[in-house]
Image 1 (cartoon, rainbow, N blue to C red):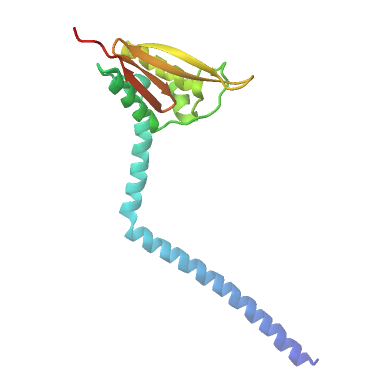
Image 2: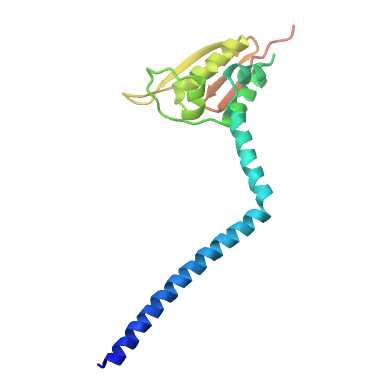
Length: 174
């Protein structure tokens, strides 16, 4: 092969390399331009999205007493249903060490297991002035499940995680 053909091939390879680099630069400039245009057009929506996300996070950052007392009601069923609806927003089931007592903030952020959530609801029952009792069910040799029954003179609610089944006592009219 002659020197001329070799130099033409080398120049062609260099032109191809330069074209690849120019193409990459063009694509990057195009992506940045489109991103800036979309940002300018949708900036208000983007800001509102992050503002709403921040507000949702702040809604979860309520204190235990505020949350529980917000749901306090003369009717046990309404109080329990209100609280389970509120808890639904941040509820997480996470297996935890049963020797550890979680704070309300830890329960909200990390989650807890059936023991932790039962204790949460029993603490709410105490604040409301209701009675409670833990129910334990053997799952197998090494595990058991726990839920809480909250009650007053009108009835009771079985509360397990974010689910509540409430029942009222029927009294004969005299």
